Image (tube, rainbow, N blue to C red):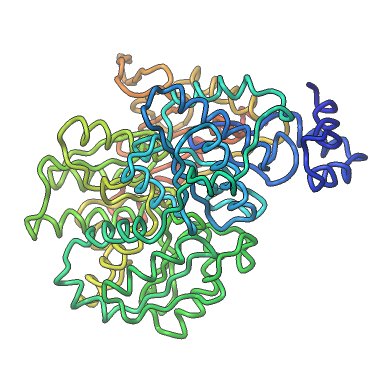
Length: 576
């Protein structure tokens, strides 16, 4: 069907509810809005789908959730599992519970056992519970840190990690057969719940997860002494961390824990922030006011589904400074390694995983301590995959994994980012340094002095309109052709991950085949410095990452700025 046929079906058909019809009839004289809602379907990708809430095939609504859930159910039933089961949960966003019930009903209607979280479910608790109850798959209704207008449908595999490319393609094939929304079956949630097909899970699973996170504490004896001396402020930004982080921190002895009351109520409108993203410094305004009042040493924040955690630290001038994602990762990694070594609790054959766009300081720290370091692509599905490969199948011990976009995992109990555990461990790190008379910024200075000064920055390019995606693909193709001509500065080598080739430039250029997953990513080395160009794939966006190493931080920043200026000048010529 074309756009207008779909619009007519959704706005007048008997299969659609009155609220949906009214919303669509209100835009009958707005062809651009009609087109935007129906010209495509939400893209099913690595973690499921995410989009604006509203009526239409290009929006998140109960009918799109119904279609997705029927496809997931059909796929699960095709796997040949004797007693398949799916875990379902939701965050605090508007319509999240409604969508979760719709998904649960569809799964149960297809004869699949459904477990459903009875309260707000963070991403790490979802991943953990899938593994604990040995579910076939999991679905969490969340749009993570996106604006309030969005919601999403995040899908997990049996390992508690995001889906494999093979899973995604098979589900897409099924989705492509479900073309008529009016004929996609829905099921009665209350009826199926009463028949025992949907089982609510609550305090036992939650307590099991909380107990697991408490066990992640590296030095319990030191923490019992240091925790009461540290003043903390925490905000869940109206999200699922509400029922987890404060409980854990108090249990671990942080007596001076203060929460931002205005943000402690679950609310999908996120009334106190523009966007509920702990990467954004503006979300800390209320927390900083409280921290100033209480004299807090550290501010912690989690996003609505608590997979990401951010932090702000009081410096020597009494001002609160936001830590970036790489800095948090480095603080955690160095503490985990050095403390485990000193306490002789380092597991056998440990390994650390991070992404090719995250700081190279991670690799330097691992090399210093003779710990295996593994590079993967951006996205926690790759970190989860590395854990599966090297720990579950390879007999090694996963120590820590992180990506620069505020995602961390300090154990193999889950396969996705854990903002809750991050808060716990970062509080332990802060308490440790506080006992030494240092804040986390001073701790970072100590780390840089020991392992090397590294600095990172990035740029996002967004291309507007329906041709935006094609524009980003065209730029990537041109950059591939240009090889080392991306910058006036000498490129020592370039890795084309899509072609699985490494180009080494010199008097006699060499091309080497590499063994790595294929993805549309270009990695450029400028000696110890680097740049990575990576398109979104589903959005008309290209991200360019830069990193540099210097004798001190000023030199590292200066080098990164020069590479950024040179590379962006070249890319700019390609799209202007």
